[in-house]
Image (tube, rainbow, N blue to C red):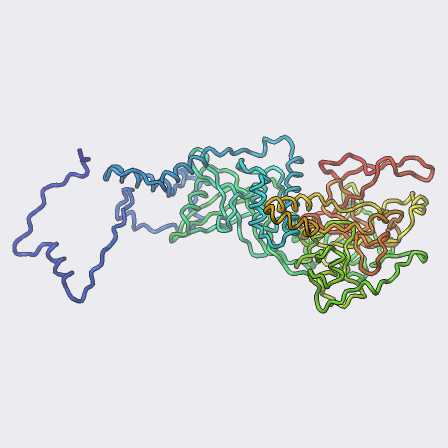
Amino acid sequence: MAPSSSRRGPKPKPNAAEPSHQESTKRVLSSKNVTTKKIARTPLPLSRTTEREKTKQPLKNFKNSHNESNKKKTHIPPISEYEEKRTKQRRFDYNATPSSSNRNDERKKKNEITTVYENAASFPSNDVAREKVRKLLKLFHGMRRLFSILSPFETAKTLKDRGKFLNDRKVFIGKVPGVEVGDVFQYWNELNIIGLHREMKYEKYIDHVIRDRKRIATSVVYDGLDDDGLEHNEVYISTELRENAELLVNSFNVKNDIRVIIKCFLKNSGRCGMDVYCYYGLYKVKRCGRERMVYTFCLVRNSGQEEVAWNVLMKYGIDGIRKGLIVEDISRQREAVPICVINTVDKERLTVESFVYKTKMIYPNWCKPIPVPHLGCDCEGKCGDSAKCLCAVRNGGKIPYNKNNVIVASGGVIHECGPYCKCSADCPNRVSQKGIKFNLEIFRTERKGWGVRSRDTIPAGSFICEYIGEVIEDDEVDKRVDNDEYLFSIGDYHMDDSVLKEASNMINDDEDEDEDEDEDEDGGDEEVLVDESGNENNGGFTIDAAYYGNVARFINHSCSPNLFGQNVLYDHDDGRIPHIMLFSAETIPKMTELTYHYHYKIGLVLDGNGNVKTKNCYCGAFECGGRLY
């Protein structure tokens, strides 16, 4: 039986004197000047909205749309609800069955509803999760450096297929374990692999989860302009997509925390700028409104969170007078970028007379490097991966740096082009000998004395500086034990290549067996550059930066460092005394302290009387054993 609303009265008979509506319509359509066209009927919405209500104007000012006295929750009918009503109407009127696409959508929705979501507050320790995040990001960048043909999306997909994603089956509402406010990421897909923002497509800038059968937003990627004055205590998001509006409106009603990642353009000093993604913390939707089919939302940052490091820097001013400034340039213009000294902790002062600033290594007279003109390449212009380039051949057939001047080599020694090579000065195989490019500064720490940080964001694999000092024999080291804070042993192997080897193995596992056999015949994998030449003869020499040195002498030790050392030869071929170049092991945000693992042997450092010396470690890393030596 049809519903009562569908009953109709008897149809009135048309007046014979006047033509009916159907007849007049036929008369118009039969005109020769009018083309007939079928008009598709669009199903009307099921909501009972009167014509008077439809003509109401939308909110003109969304900021004033939220009245504190009005406790009624804002509601925008979700698309899924509208489609569900349409499906029910079709079943009622036409007795139709749902299509296969509808069944797939329902099955997908059911899987999303059963997804487990957790809060990071339930995790006992953030240090373990923090270390997992750092290792996964190092693996991601290791794959990108070794195999530059892989896009960030392809790299992330490979990690996902290998089950390397963190929190892949968990959706966090609020804080994600291991991620801290101010963390910087070079690529969108870094957000995916650690679970900060799970949507892998760039257009999906709002991530969500289903809770209580409602889709709420969990993270938002906001496209900022640049890094000047990035306070962003309030973020305004406008969208024309009803689906995105539904997510934010539901979050407004539920009042859940939303992670905000801001994409901004960083203008590094002395270098080209770059786009990065910075995690700014947790926000809540405080105001929302609509005007001319554009939905606008205001997200306000939760109080009590740490400030982003470069926001603090902007308050003091980069080019203006810095708070606690002691020395404007301790290098006295010997470096291309001035290196200032900052102390906001105590009254300790560091002056240019504290040590002699040097930009070149100091060798004793009996240990002068011997020039090797016959080892220079004959390349014209820039060197490349070719058997004709002698320097590339010495590096295993590959240039150890990619097009972004990022190191991709792993091994004992890297051979750069030197003064006897015929290539140009902008050759990609001359990265470390071009000097400091980032805006470094020396600052006073709370418990570790002086330290070094950068006012620029440093991409992973970038060259930082060389460890400069006086080359001495190990026998001479025993005589300088009273001032051993600036000793750097050349004999130790400085680079942890486990990440690069794991990245290489993951790619090699995807290759066919035939390709693997061909590589075995050619001598194995050529992507990972392992050169142990000179490594056997290393040892017996130490760099002492107590009296002569550069900014590297102030870099503190850490059991979980963000720098690594690499042996480099370019002006001589003596593997016993290579140059110690420091590179970034990960993406380092602005104002983050630069640290290195000095590989001290506990129990083997002795004083002048032969007694074991001890020194506490205050790096604060999760793996820290509490002792430096």
